[in-house]
Amino acid sequence: MIEIKNLTFRYNDTDIFKEANLCLTSGMWLLEGENGQGKTTLLNLLGKQQNIYKKNKLLSSESKIIIDDSVILLDENVDIPLFFTEKELYTIIMRINGLKADKKYKTCYEKKKLAEYSVGERKYAVLNIISNVSPKVLLIDEYLTNLDSRHINDILTTLSKMEKKGTIIIISSNDNYVKSLIKPVIKIQNKELYIFEKEN
Image: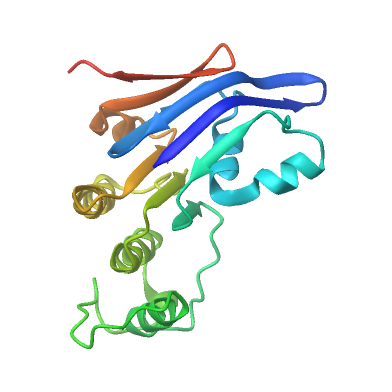
């Protein structure tokens, strides 16, 4: 579950959010808003940076963000150790999360170092590994940018499976193809948060 109450965030004497509220219990959502309206800020807040922002007096003390501890934030700058194979990275991530690695884990592509994967292959492989961790919340900030439609479709198929297992997924993307495929929307407008379903 994600619950936001009275979210007020101020940067350089400008309100980015003003008493915004949001409650999500399930689903995959597209996060929309104009550049500079706070999409990345919101995902960072949900990704457990509330205390840092409060310490820097950017987030009001009245703001309340309730979110499950099992949350992963993926952005376009995520640092992937390229010297591992996909299977090795899978095993490491499962151990870090206290989970048992499946010896029958099927890699997305050939058994080679991640450095030899294309960017799209690498991002898909990482998402496939994360799906085995089964976080309660997955936040994706421009992670799908500059990928071809095949890799976007592969990733969204994996995300749909995670959604069906109960993961709340929020995706921020400037890619028009990505935006056309996700109907439920969280809209940042007038410093508040709104939920609606896009028409076909």
